[in-house]
Length: 270
Image: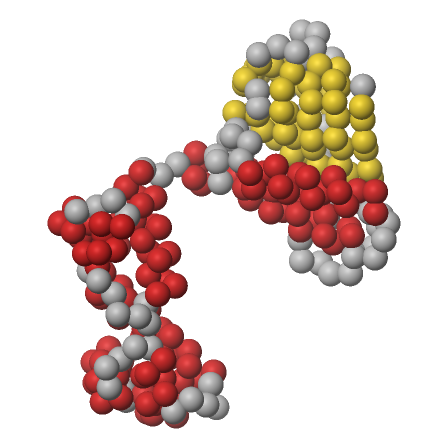
């Protein structure tokens, strides 16, 4: 059995940005514990085992899943595994008082070992031999939180969306990055696999506003930010946001807010 276990609970942290991890372990061919009483919150990833799946009794109720799977173990639970077997796994544990919130209905669930999950685990394992060095515990805390987020996004309440919703979100992301440019919505639709008619229908169903209105709102929000957080002139802001003229920027801003950009800036500044 190849086993690596590190307790970092008492190591000093430079910051308090992520919940502090108590311990971590990476194990190869680790035999199942027949009985285990859980302390804290343990986030366990089992990659594969000697059987196709595993079944565990938790406080008298049976749970099971095929490999690979995520196994959430909670404070005070008593676990029993009847069958013999071994598994390769990685886990990290939080003290009960500092544990992040995890959905109550998430106990054991099959997962996809995505490149993001592999990358986070790999980086944590690279840092473990240096865990007592300055700042390393903070980095491990941050990486474990990112890993937990990736795992939870696969849980039904977080990540189960339709293909159409996912495509609309991709287009929304594209518009977030390019809203100051001249946009051809029909061409964007075709690039993401839509006919223009189908795109506008799905977009409206998801956002409740036309793509042009969505982009106009992005421009307005950025205009408000620039008016309050920068010293750029109204003309410069209008140019940065892609308006065809300063006068048209002032017109659009006033249509949405009831104020000219200068009036908004004066009212917003202390």
